[in-house]
Length: 381
Image 1: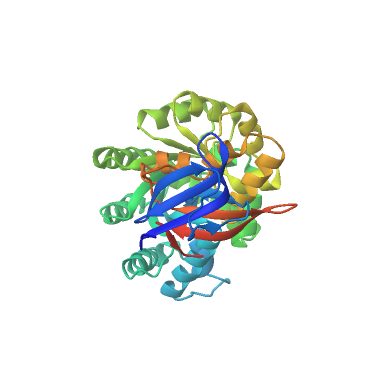
Image 2: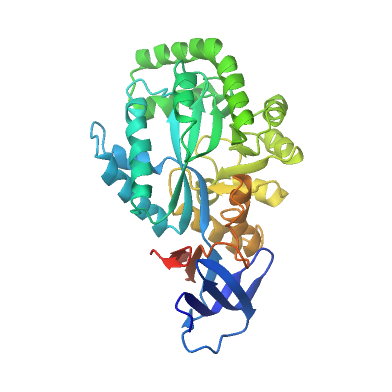
């Protein structure tokens, strides 16, 4: 037995286009061999027919914010928040996570801008000290209608952890919130605003968008193009939205709100990303399109856990059980395809030469369960 070699056998190995019963050999943190049938070596670990899946790649989650503010008015220490967030992430099988940090807080009672520097510092310090079990990158979510977005973006864009930038515009009456009643329902309930406060909030957001949205969108896109950073659109609703996103060189279409936008994004080569909770719950909480319908049409590429990390594997189970697609295609939406869209070509698939980021998944009568997680061959859960 080589000191740096591990062998896992009697596993259902989920490859890019098929599932095989076999064994995987790991050396020096990478996948060294994939074989059909059971291994005969004495040190092979028997997985008893469980699935061996690639580590999940999460491009868009604001889960960290829950730990920064576990209750209204409670500001939790950022280092502790990062560790608790990381523990939940790795427990969900996510070995690569893009922590989505919002630039430009529309919440009139919010702390996001105040917390942003501390969140970035805490993530980076935890990674540098080796305390995190998932690999963390930064996804800068730029609210283009906010007056300080470009200023803050320019301060953060030099950080080496930034690998993805998305352009958002949550102005009432368009994109995600074409229906003003849905906008009122969402923000008034989320921020606990009175009727008068809500009306003033709508007026302010529309005025800010008129002044800042277009120049911020153009400036941020140009900076990303110059730096070769992966970009994502957000809540595109029309053909014109998608064509503009494609013209900026965006590689990902986050949460298109209409079938027209999803179809056009797919046609123009943008990877369509939808929320895994949308699959699990059977529809959008905002009243927009159902992700399952996009799976059936063959235009959904990537799933994001968004606000609920465990939803990735739960969505894969549901797609598999309901025969929306085969298991390798379902698993690809949370591993290979997001990795490729973010230009991380060393992971996301069980393939010789790639990182041994792996998840042992036990099938039960009504769900898939994460049993073990490996990051570059090291067991971390």
